[in-house]
Image 1 (cartoon, rainbow, N blue to C red):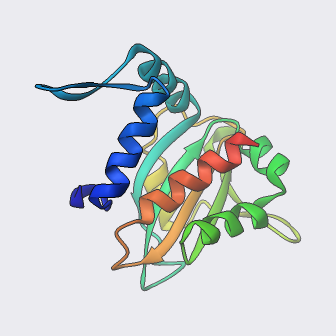
Image 2 (tube, rainbow, N blue to C red):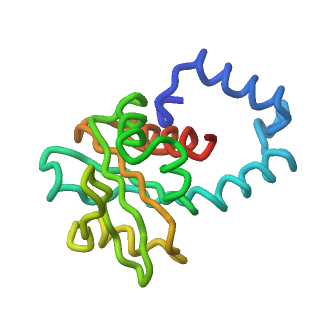
Length: 168
C-alpha cells in the first residue's frame, strides 16, 4: 500500500469500488485479479492515454520533476475542455505546481499554446523525452505535471488531469 501512496482504508475502498464496478475479482488465495470488463476498460484507456513517465523539465523549472502523459487527439480534447490554461489549472487542482502543455503538429513538431498563439517548443528537454513515445500523431497533446522533486504523487496529478480532460 505504501508503494502506491495509499493508506489501508483508501486501498480497501478502492478495491471495493473496483470490485463493485466489475473491474476486478477477489480470490481468497490469489488475491485481486483483473476481470474481462476491467481489461476492456484498461485497453480503451490505454488507446487514448499513453504514459510518457518522468520527463525532463529542468529548462522550464529547475527544482521540479515532470511526469507526462500523451493524449491521443489531445489537442481537440484540451480545446473542448476549455484550452491549455484550463488544462494547466486542472493539473494544479490535482496537486501539481504547474503544467507544461504541448501539442504535436505535423512531422512531429511540438508547439506550446500561449495566449498569443503557438510557440515552437522542439528545443525543450521534455520534447526529447516525449519523442520516445511510439506513434506520436498530429493532433496529440502532452500534459506534463510539474512537481516538487520530493513529491511522489506527480504521476497521479498528470494521469488524473488526463482523465478529466478526456472525460469532457
